[in-house]
Length: 369
Image (cartoon, rainbow, N blue to C red):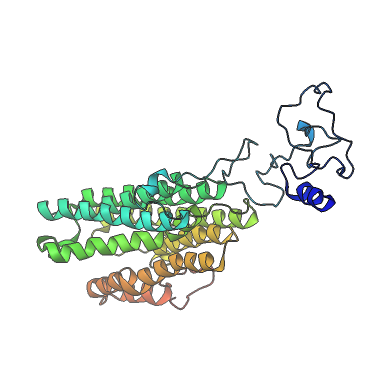
């Protein structure tokens, strides 16, 4: 009988204090059923394994998130990512769940972004191939960046870092999209597509390549938005944000300077060698690489798994490879050599001006990098 009573006291309903002969440590005996209920108590409350003196926990001692920094006692950001002290809400997967149903949040963020990205590219290709125009190309690229970033964020717990990295991607996208749209309207088209826009199959390859570029470049954003919990913002995030701000300012200034240079009638047929273009032959690309290094830095600051961190590094590595070895600098350098290669002034400019990383003023000539 004593053994049965001990078993029930350990495993029975309201295990703590279930047996009448077993008293919880450091607690007063429970009130008899006939005793009047204390003010503030509720019917059906269990034994006070987390109470003080057998009473319900006082609001003053209830476990609350750190309101100043939005963290719980373990130093991790609550799932909701909010610092208001409100109850934590579970992550919402409404948006991405429609694309990748009944899968973990990380799979929905990565897979949903890929599906949405490629769907946008296919719609853009269908319209552009029908009208035989390339004017939609950059517009749909910017639309894919913004749509995938925002949709993955809406489906995430919306923690501070998720809001930060999504905002960084969208701000860069808005700037680039506006610049490219103005350039297409000004120039009337893009010579890269003169032949392929009349060949739907080959034209589709270009659109799918743009989709791959969007997904890999914005990968740190999708990875962070796929996390259900993460550490709060810290110095690493702020340093990365500063790098991003410097990069986007550098890229914007370079683009503005080049546009103003080309707009001046006196510069018709000349190569640009003023402003930031006097310290780097491709300062806009240097700024863009810094932008994605900053985005990657925010992702690394989450202190997530090794897999997430390594995958985030793919973005700046891919952008650097693309701009320096594939479609950016090699094509522009070849075109410039064909156009101005016979001019002594251009040869001197190319010899004394780095290809990518700017030369600091006052250091003289520098080997092209």
